[in-house]
Image 1 (tube, helix red, strand yellow):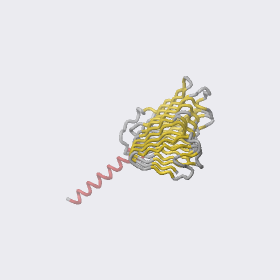
Image 2 (cartoon, one colour; image 1 turned 90 degrees about the vertical axis):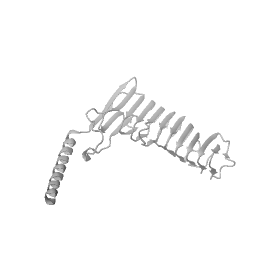
Image 3 (spheres, rainbow, N blue to C red; image 1 turned 45 degrees about the vertical axis):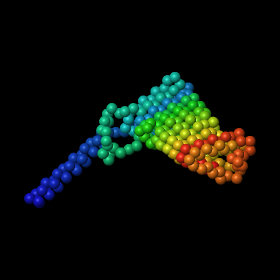
Image 4 (cartoon, one colour; image 1 turned 180 degrees about the vertical axis):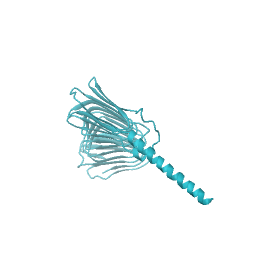
Length: 283
């Protein structure tokens, strides 16, 4: 009886595995990725609006406006009133929900190129994946990360006259950039910046650190955390800077011999830092 049971179990497992392989192979053939490669030949475009559902988004400088996409969703590309709209929508042909098929493991990707010009408006939003913006010049930028995801936002080599950022669970990382009039707020995420100039701005982190390294000496802004530390260092000896450090339940430490009583020179560049439960370090 035991031998018969084992034989039946073995036969069942073999048939089950063969059925799985056949089904996954069928899905592999019938679930092709949606690929888009479109150039937008309109030199009058001044605004860019990107709405991503699941893709890793990259916005970078190129010879002209173009959009390339590879992923599981549909994508709508339109341009009117001097605005290029790129919208990733639900693919009505794919409603599998949870995915257990090893043949269907891939990352969606969207790349938008912008010619070497200054955009009036940039609006980028994402539900679940990374946003990477590189070498873009914009008057007014709006970046929004939905609460459903915790993907990081990277800004590299950008020049922004104004920035509004909301990323409840999404850290923002700024490198080699020049940003003015920024309003940056996170809830469960950090704010980091390196080798950048930030002016006339407000950086707010609820639960997360604010880490600013090798910053331009002309930087002047306000920063605040509820639960987290604030770190600040310069790319060279600071000049004409005034520190207003306000740790509520923590300490402040200035490890920089250029400052005397939290001031160097005229003090026209004011750094105003607040922590409720955290420390402040100036290096």
